[in-house]
Structure formats: structure tokens, C-alpha cells
Image (cartoon, rainbow, N blue to C red; front, side):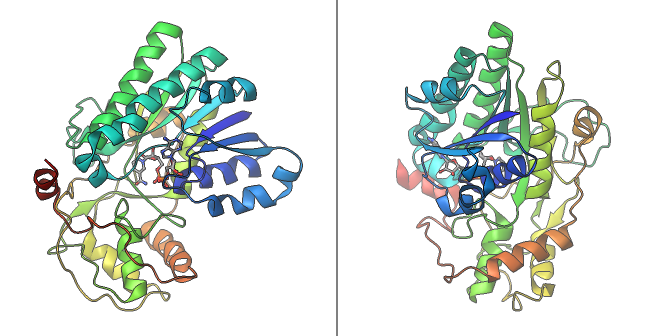
Length: 342
Ligand SMILES: NC(=O)c1ccc[n+]([C@@H]2O[C@H](COP(=O)([O-])OP(=O)(O)OC[C@H]3O[C@@H](n4cnc5c(N)ncnc54)[C@H](O)[C@@H]3O)[C@@H](O)[C@H]2O)c1
């Protein structure tokens, strides 16, 4: 397949690029390197795929009008759309910045795909946009049918799903949106806080207080990056008749206390120093309705939390530099931040 991956230099995007290349596909990566790291693509750029012309990286903003020509020039079978402003707190402080990439950028991806004759877009949406979905474990959930975004980021991600739906109706595109739970694994930036495991693991590896956890009972659904990438690949290769939204999660709720315990057990990480302040925006909700993805995509998560955390800790430990938090708003409750920003 000819696959165009937006957000190719990011945590999930670069892992998807590596997987697609390992299966022999032709891949064009697109990224403006806003939060991504070109080093994530070292394997792709330094290997046989790049030498034989199977991989190219285009540095461009997805909102740039020229992006349309990039898509047309590559002529992909599938567009995997992962480029996004991913910082929920930034979306609160500057919702316009967030919407420029996450809404307008996504519209440009829709337009570019339509004009290039691409029907299948696989879109990285967020389970955070679907708080209204059932929170308890259900094997055969029918739909994630209750949109309930609670941040500009979640609203923008949902808007992306709705635009894709509109383009499906108007132009016959067959998009698949994957509403991702808390994805974790190697290459996730441990300096911000989009990912609790990377953030807590990075802090522990560095001997800093974790600033996460509160009383340790906050619950999330953590899904390993390789499993998520597997869902993208399956969605990209699914029959063109298949379209809609799917929750991609582990189906298991895990407390932050358990995450600390597992990180502490992993040989690469020293003992945790305990809990400090909770994430004020912690959803405390698991998203477990993965029955549809299993039924329609044949997808099941296979990496359990113990193994996933072991691999993540190994990667964190091998980072050349100590992990210093780069985000000045870390630890600031969303509500306070929103008030001080207004
Ligand atoms: N990591 C998670 O837990 C999680 C959960 C739900 C949804 N998602 C979604 O998955 C996708 C990938 O997330 P990630 O965790 O890999 O984040 P990431 O920040 O590592 O990757 C996002 C990539 O998009 C690029 N990008 C940002 N704005 C861009 C623009 N305007 N033009 C071109 N490129 C741009 C960044 O440079 C980065 O490489 C995002 O769409 C995110 O919303 C992630």
C-alpha cells in the first residue's frame, strides 16, 4: 500500500511508520516537528526503506495550502492522520492554536484526500472526547455514541471525527476514526504530561517527585503503542465498506498506584517516591468498549501492562539526558490555568 502518515515524527506516528516499512509498504511521512522529533525516524531514514525510496519525510504544516499538493504528488491509497496539537493544557490556554491544527488542519487533510481521490483516512481521535460512553467494562458495546468533550482538545478531536463523517457523506470517503485511550510506550515524550506512564516513569528514572497520583486511585485505561499501531494498520487495510469510530483501549482500568508499583518493580527504575498532587484533569474513567474493534477489525490488544511498562522503562532508562520537565504549566490545574489565561 502507499501510505501517507501525518504526525510521522511523533510518538505513535513514527512507530506506525516503522511498522508499515517493515511490512514492505511505501510510506510518505508528513510533520512540522512541532512536538515530534526527527530522531524518532532514524530507523526509517537510515535503513533500506529510505535508500530504496520507500520512505520520504516532508516537513510541512498540515494546514499549509501546499499540503494538498504533497498528498496529490504522493497519490496514497491510505492517509493515516495523526498530526495534532496534543497538549490538553495548551488547548485550554490557547484554544485557537489548538483548533488551527486539530480542526482546520484536519479539514485540510480531508480536502487534500478528497482532491487526491483517497477514500480511506484513518484518524487518531481520542477517547477523551467520548466521556459519555459507558465507563464500565462491556464486552459487546454497540457504539461510542455519547460525545462529551471536556476540553478544547477533546472538542477539536471530536470535530475532526464529525468532519470526516461529513466528507464521507458528501464525497464517499470511508474514514475510520480510532478513539484512543491512554497510549504509552517508547518514544512518548516524558517531559510533558500527555502520557501518565511516560511522565511518571521519566520522573522516577530521574529521581524527581512524580506530581501524579493524588491518593493513587485515579483510574485510566492504558494501551501499548504497538497494539495501537496494529489497530491503525488493520483499519488501513480493512474493506472499503467499513467506516465509523472505534474505541482502541486495553479494556482494563488501572490505578495510578498500580502504575507506580509496576514502574518500581521494573529493574530499570528506582523505587517511587510516593504520590504528590493529582492531575486535576484526570478523567478517572476507563474506556472499555473495545468489542466493536474486535468484531470489525479483528483487533485485540496483546501487550499486557507488565510487559508494556517493562519495555517503556527500558527505553526511558536509555535516554541520553536526564528528563527535565519542559512544560511550565505542569501541575497547574486546568481550571486555574483557564482562569489565569482569561
Ligand atoms: N498519546 C496518546 O495517549 C493519545 C491518546 C489519544 C489520541 N492521541 C492522538 O494520537 C495522535 C498522535 O499522538 P502522539 O501521542 O503520537 O503525539 P506526538 O506529539 O508525539 O505526535 C504528534 C505529531 O504531530 C506533529 N504535528 C503537530 N502539529 C502539526 C501540524 N500542524 N502539521 C504537521 N505536523 C504536526 C508533531 O510534530 C508530532 O510529530 C494525535 O492525533 C493525538 O491527538 C494520542
